[in-house]
Length: 426
Image (cartoon, rainbow, N blue to C red; front, side, top):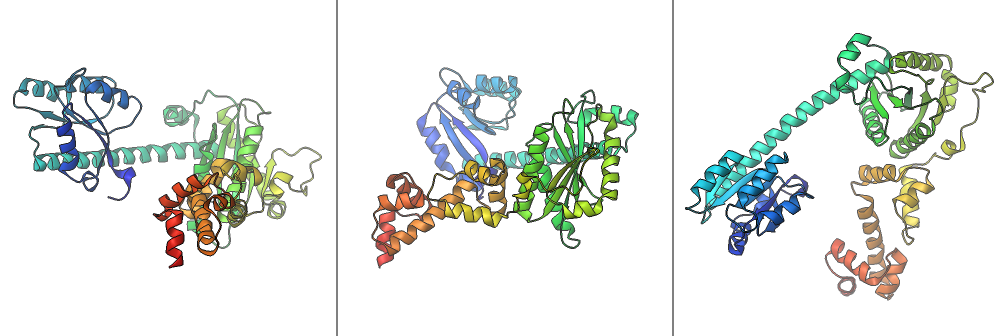
């Protein structure tokens, strides 16, 4: 069990320190699929922790000062906190155990604790949790598919009003909301790479989730996603423009593909989405050459009477012809500065979230880990090939002082900068 995120978070609640220490050392919790995140001497302290932290399993004694285990469990149930409970009890606690059973427990284990009984109970809880997660994820996936299908049919005008009203509760918005715009965001890839196309669609849909009022679905008939933007008035275009500019830049940097967003006329009601979508299709059909020549663009419909369809690209998008390699190059060149996701995003006219996602997708590292590894790699070069002090090196690689350099260096490399320098001279 290597991934800590898969471990079941557990707290121990007992007023006897020897019991707590014994529990911690009784078995290898990580190998069992658990991690002990905190211990408490009474239910009151545990409750304070639970109010701010997510925990799946509570192993608690029954009799404790201030707040006993029964009271802790009852409060958790009253607040609908979905927790598993294992109760520890003595031979004289049977009445308490019966009361605990009525609240809902996985097992009660008599003191002194049995390794086999505890191990068996933990395995049962893990199996139950996994089964619950699988059932929940399957149900959520089914609902998600139904919701996306409804949004797709709504955008394309392929759903009757009666059916739409009947299934409104599956939509993430109310049909009474007024004002919307439909958008088709298409992208160009070489050949017929369906896997790449699906990856781009999924990346765009996930990316657009961070924008309130934007609902994106796949268009299986072409290399595109369809987006429904909820907006209060025809003039409410700033957020739409920003989200589309960011999305175009995002997939350009991530996949090195060009894309074009075509936004339909403002619709005062949800039911008129289909009309707007058909206008987009008609525009694409009659202006194929223009669209091919002017990728990485945002086009608003209907064009003004004097609109020049051979218009140049807007500056904000014309300057977006960059790849993720250029972002990495910029990061390397500026690592000695106070560089972060915001400074990179400002330079490339993107959002910090987009840049962060790119680093995660392309390097399998979050930005902080990437820049730390970059800086430490450079620091290792200086330590091995120069006589520069740690203080001087810390400034050259972008750390505020040599103490911080030493802390990060030891975390990444496993030894201090001084130890590394000595080792490199051998």
